[in-house]
Amino acid sequence: MLVAGFGSGKSYAGVIKTIIQKLKHPQHRVAVYLPTYNLIRDVSLPIFTEALNNLNIKFKLNKVDKTITIPNNSQILFRTLSEPELIIGYETAYSWIDEADLVPKDKMELAYNKILGRNRSIENALIDTTSTPEGFKWLYEQSQNGRWHVIKAKTTDNKFLPDSYIAQLREQYPEELLAAYLNGEFVNLTSGSVYSHYDRFTHSTDRTIRPKDALHIGQDFNVGGCCSSVFVIEDNNPILVDEFTSADTYDIIEQIKLRYPRHSNITMYPDASGYQGKTNASMSDIELLQRSGLNINAPKRNGKVADRVNAVNLLLQKNRFKVNHKQCPNVARALEQQAYDSSGQPEKFAGASTNDDWNDSMGYFLVRVFGIIEQRVARQSLSFG
Image 1 (cartoon, helix red, strand yellow):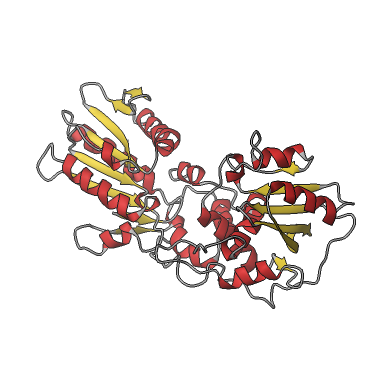
Image 2 (image 1 turned 90 degrees about the horizontal axis):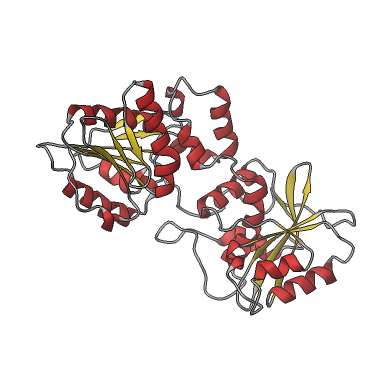
């Protein structure tokens, strides 16, 4: 088990180990497991292709079947951890599991048991796993059971990384995450308050909306109570200056017209579920916002909740995010009160216009404009020199 920070070289180490095991057992298959098919296609297959070319090993890549075949050898199989029920119908002499902690713990446990059942072509067939830790999940529990040889590595151990990469990580993550993402340490990422860096006094401002301000509105959709958080940007820092609730998307549009009649530069940052939500029988909620003449910033689907939380906490930690508490009492309360539930997720509340709804509304704007620039795929592609 190689437990390591981002960009430490763990994935490339797994690639080389897999190739060695394949050449060592030419008549038997070996398998590589990743959380999603996208990671197989966008990360793992390109790294394997580059490594085999660098080693002057001839191979045939089948992207449809997700296999690599080396002449006079059997295959390297690529399978996803997110669908454990498909880990059937083959046997392997070696298995490598990459980024196991990106998979929910119960699903990862099921996938691992399936992998154990497949890994039987030879006696004492090996299983390796490499991952950056994501709290006390499957990787941590396995590291404590005495069956694994555990190796720890830091991002700084990879001498091929540019200095700017580590500087970017320090800029993009709150302090409590750097122990995991730089040093590969198991740390509690979900205890206590979700927005643990928020302080009502430290992050207070009396800034209000001015006539020439460009307005940025984070939007959460709910039946009977949509939440809107209104920001301005000053000196490249976000300031929450207003909030309001609406019955539906028509009401959102009407309230914006009534509240901000002199502001023509307004951008909405809605929940991506608005592409499916229907206030109107023929148009989605986001289509209605677009038809009203508002600028819209909305990906086809929302990013990870953890990325949204991390983006907000980093802004709070660096004292870049301010809140006008008199104008925005609901968001101020939500920032103080939302905690993690028993499954390690930000808690949800029954009803509309609750703490989670307000925090979601402001989070959609903050993560899209001030969020983490690099995505997980990009970081993994940097993990070799």
